[in-house]
Image 1: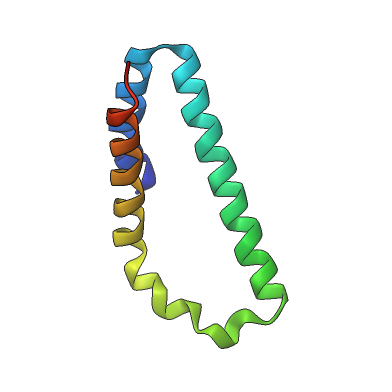
Image 2: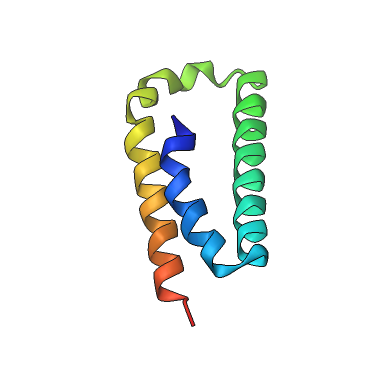
Length: 79
């Protein structure tokens, strides 16, 4: 699951220090909570007509792309 995907990111961040690890954890927390809140609000607003379940098959690809982007940001912003 997500733990297996995120473990290498956490291990590389831990080598950068506690502050980087805390920042990474905060980003993941904010992203997770924002995503849950957004989908909850959409569901409450009757967004089931958007057929969001058809996007579920792309969840892995979307997560992969997001992790690649995060990795690229980390690589390009290293000191």
